[in-house]
Length: 220
Image 1 (cartoon, one colour):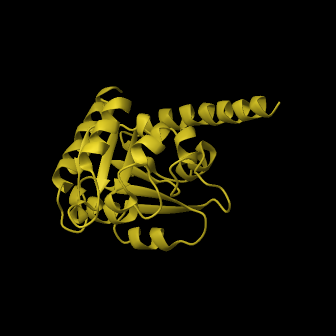
Image 2: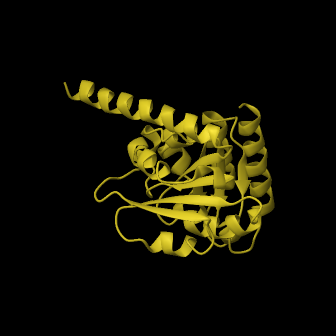
Image 3: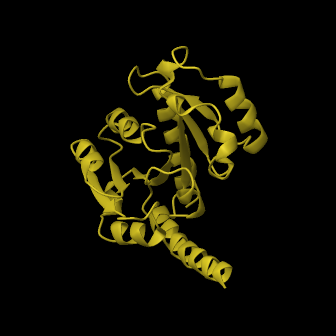
């Protein structure tokens, strides 16, 4: 009975996610679901990304957090629109929450919609939000064993961003181990090495975003 209930919850979520995806597709924007452990640098990445995309590619952000609006407050001066979603005790965003948020937004104003999911490497992987691409962050301070430990998350990634790479050589981190683990789980997702602090890899990340947006729009 418990298994059936879980399946029903996921099926209901997936149906709403499919509707979200159709709405987002019609708006000519690229929607990205950013997932990672807490402290991996999602907000810092967006603080650098949004200005680099420039005013010709306006970005909206949905920020998921258990409590507070602190991350949203950091991003609000940079984004064309910022929406905070507080989940209370919920460890992930749901398609229903995203549907409610985008239902109140003028999506035609944006080129990109960044969904900053709740910091968690387990729960968000099970819930489709209607995004076009899944972005998974792994920061150097987290350690080089996370790909193998949280394989479900990394299997779904459309791109893996290794963040805080300016700390390589400072911390004990085996980059080859990460590459080997990814090669066993997901060969289609590129691994981009970047640092929001130094700017390393940001150009490659921005190029990837533009490529993915062009691919999504061309399918309309």
